Image: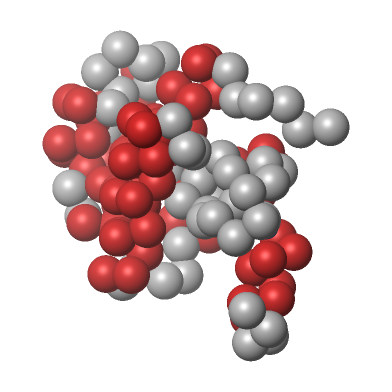
Length: 121
Ligand SMILES: [Zn+2]
């Protein structure tokens, strides 16, 4: 079903994680230099308004802008480097790509997350 993530996908998730981190820490300028330097950013995104709309898909999902989330994003980036990214921490099954796209810092698969929320883990 879910195959191992390709290097290209990992790159994509890394960019997403860095965007998330920049939003969480409010460091958009740094993000543009480090994460988006070589990527196709719409030309008109150099203005603040353009950048805002570029990041809208993230900010809509970002209800929790707290230290906890920042830590999870940092841990996800570490897993990206160490090769453990994309696997559920609980059951070690691959996390669905749809979930990773919504939440690139997800530690658990949907099932384990649900169990955790219900206090079953
Ligand atoms: Zn799991």
